[in-house]
Length: 144
Image (cartoon, rainbow, N blue to C red):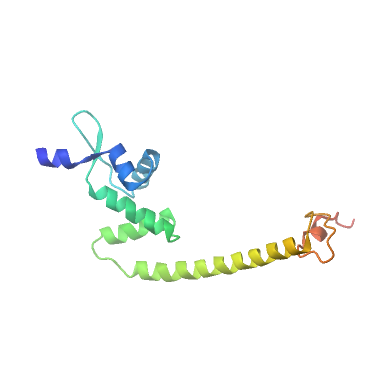
């Protein structure tokens, strides 16, 4: 039992090793993403070392675009011991979502490039010859 106690990590150690802050760690506990920690005899929260790995998995999934709700659902599916093809299906859906966002960003980039090239100077009263922004008409008072 002594070995188990000594290899457990305190809150600050887990946060530092996982590259998160303590508030994030507690938030993930409240959300059920990580197990509620045990308490030491002195009342300190203690975590198994695997918590650091789990936090790394959560952060990696977030970098891939999964929301915390999606991560929680995927973790729960894995904890049931019979993972379904959820990850693959969700990855396909996330990929489609990312492709859509990329297309939107390309449109934004192209429009901003046109704004710079046209030397636009106002959203509502632009004086450039061929303003690529459609907002001037929208900003005008509607006819009464």
